[in-house]
Image (cartoon, rainbow, N blue to C red; front, side, top):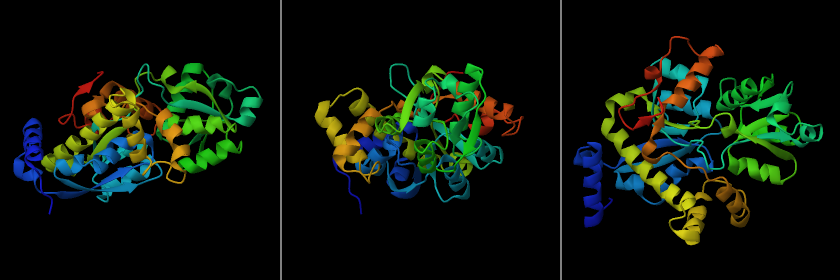
Length: 339
């Protein structure tokens, strides 16, 4: 049985009032499953588990890990996972069109002044003269699946540069990394905590920034089943409360440096339990720190970016032409902006 002291109880009641939740729902200690990738950008969930923010919101959380975005969307639709944080994909949009899922918030974003996602090329491509994203004309570009966020980023860059690329689906991030390092594909785009260590190895080179082509890109979103969004409002509000507290802690510590170097060290220790677990802490720490990007406070959602993504998926014939933003998003939970 979980017991709360007076300070925690007052805090929970305040959170309940702020989110419109009834106090009994907060006290239920409901079990939920959250889907995640082992990326620094998913740290909001890790922190909320480790520092008790989900527990403070009345939730007993299990984390379930995936290797790509699309399977996570399927798991939400099937009920195997209750909430997840991942990039918008064609599969996710199609499931929303079927009435299975809803985006309820925003997570990772490209932001001016914050070092974000990178375009990478293999060493073989780099040595042959591919030193900018435009140099990928006629080259191969790694994606997990057609309609993935990698596909979207590559296509938006290619359109801006007026080039054509061949998209190579490799299903998993690990497989893409292996193909890029061995020169089986020429290019890729990925978050900085993966891009920078790869570039440091010499087998891969950074040739551009995603933000140069998508300056306010809503990289990842928070989503759940349509049933949870409409029928489990107290639970969903509690999830967003706990997740938001984890995000606020992460941003304050890793970006705003509010707790100084000691705070950063402690946060790196926490994140290392989930990210780069196969590396010793001293080798993992630089990648975790270098990969820091701001996560949206309060799960604020950039609907203008989501509309651009939806429009692109439709233009490629990857999702239905009649799908609207309202089909994809339930905007009743968090603040939206951009549109």
